[in-house]
Image (cartoon, rainbow over all chains, first blue to last red; front, side, top):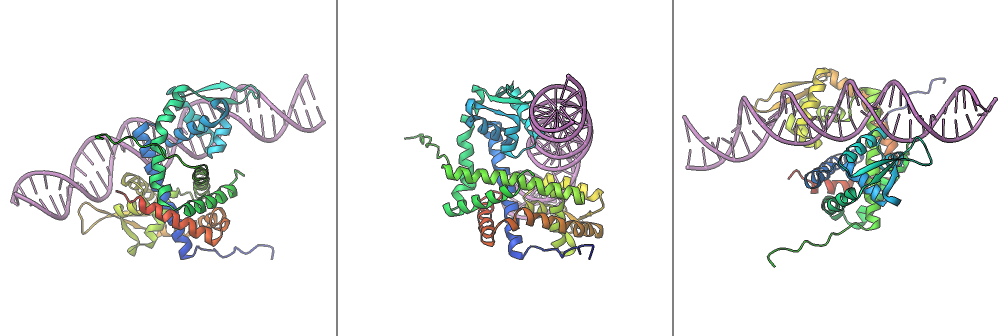
Length: 157
Length: 157
DNA sequence: AACAGGTCGTTGAGCCTTCAACGACTGGCC
DNA sequence: GGCCAGTCGTTGAAGGCTCAACGACCTGTT
């Protein structure tokens, strides 16, 4: 046989499909609720918040654009746009990268840190209310392990 | 005490945070990969695909707009826009709703069904490759149960 | 030293979603 | 019957993300 026969489609079982759809709906509702809470209480989008969190943990509160993109699994273009908004809000500033002329360092300002400090409690509270406190410790652990496997299987090839 | 003291913030433990972030990154990568596959192979967005799937399962391949919105956890406005695109592609058509003068029924055309049949194998294959086949049955079950709990806790209040 | 291929970050157009406002209709209540 | 609050679906503007293309820079090769 020169042509490999188009193998039969392996559909999902009823159970698998139910799990998959639970994931889809829950994810949609979760992102909606969290984004809405942040926007309402802190005037930040989820993307902006995530960028601020990573910067707050980085040495010197500074991270290269490409690292931000990789860690958050966002496109470079998306990071550029998000950082531009953060910069025009005074929460972040760009600096040239010493070691690489192409690179751009993103540095969190004091105003940015203060904004994050103000936003974090409400966000964490929402993550608890809608996810962490809804699950048992074992459930959250299993969820995390499964998603870690998915994440690792989807290494940016 | 008339004013309830602002209770201390209950931050996430290191483990909880790791699980939460695994979820965030995996979700971002997963939606990216699935959306890209559908767009590339079938010229459909994920939203459009989801609408077609629900219609294909409905009696008469017809569903009210509000039901579509609720089942998919999408806003009504979003459903309107998605259906408008599907309609102008000839995959769907709108009909008045007999029982409710406000309602609009969305009916899947034969072309729509054919388009879904063509798109489904590749999509299912991608869901398998990136999620189902990456996990054990138990892991997928645990993931589904956890997400079902999250979904139910986030009933559109 | 010059080049080729790759990476980094940006840009602007196009698409999708959100948001607020609206008209049409319904159902309960007086 | 008439009102009134609420639901349904739509609309258009605004905002965020994707995509393709680009200039600048780096690295290894010759």
